[in-house]
Amino acid sequence: MAVWDDLVGQTRVEEQLAAAARDADALVTAHAAGEPAPEASKMTHAWLFTGPPGSGRATAARAFAAALQCVSPDRAMGGIPGCGFCDGCHTTLVGTHADVEIVRTDLLSIGVKETRELVRRAQLSPAGGRWQVIVLEDADRLTEGAGNVLLKAIEEPAPRTVWLLCTPSIEDVLPTIRSRCRLLTLRTPPVEAVADVLVRRDGIEPEAAYAAARATQGHIDRARRLATDERARARRAVVLKLPLRVADVGGCLKAAQELVDAAAEDAKQVAEEVDVKETEDMKAALGAAQGGRMPRGTAGVMKDLEERQKRRRTRTQRDSLDLALTDLTGFYRDVLALQLRSRSAIANVDVRDALERIAGDSTPERTLRRIEAILACRDALDRNVAPLLAVEAMTMALRE
Image (cartoon, rainbow, N blue to C red; front, side):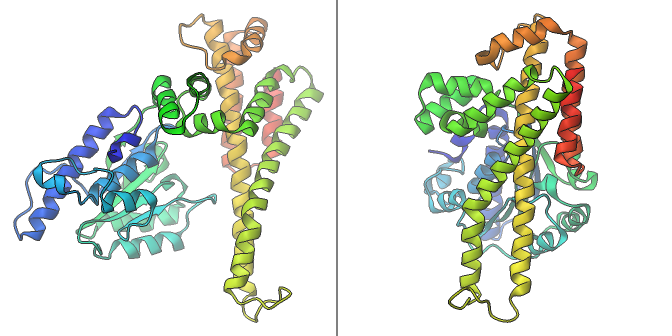
């Protein structure tokens, strides 16, 4: 299958990227033949992929990276780069291509040190003779200093280097960076398209696939997790019961504590699965003696690893909380739709009784204030407010 098959509901973006990949191939061909570059090329050295969570920003960037490295013989006969089966496409998609660096982080931010290393790599010539591609999946997590380092590289790009930056919104990167990138905006995929992918690619039963796609409102990764992970379904069910539990102060505080505890438990499980093995591997690499005694001079390395693991647990907890807040926002959006007698489809049909109860007991104005309280909680968490304080403030506001 072609690399573009992984894009769901993004026909316009696919056409733009395919056209750019075709022109990129023409540029490489002209360079190899010592000919001047074609005029009016749709290819450029820096791209900014934006779109709501679940729209497939990183998927689009990786597909484009694969198309840029495509070495299919069909290209010589006018075929669109991105066949999906040649060595260039395959190694890019599985993450082993020598000229493609895919950067994602499980930490809260990307700092100057890591960005300088990316810039250094971006100055290298492609090992395979085509393009040096840097895919930065979390460009919104660049610190201000890291953003300034990246800006210099984008302002003065190497001849055959391409930067592919992914971020939820253009506001999440420095204005000076976005002004030097070609913008691609992805949309939330239709529920039917997401359900079709879950059935076709993941073998999920059609009814379960549609229910998951509808509940997550077109978020591909969350829909897949909801359809395949019983723990995810149980966690969502608990979150959607929260609006019925905030009738008094005690209920608000208890619900907040349980929400934060559940997020902390998620972080703990990830740590148990990843941290222990990571620590043992590091000790083995540093030459730990039998019994765990470490060689002299390695204490700093182990301390750095522990600090990284701590930051990863913090992000895992925040991501888990953010997922719960997203589900909660969807609940109140459905409440508002019922109150306004909107024709929009209800996402959380499995809790329709609760939706109707809340809708009947309040007004659209109160529902909007509750949605604002959830958004304020997300903003507070982004500003490093203590999770319990932020969530308690939110649950108290939901009571009003």
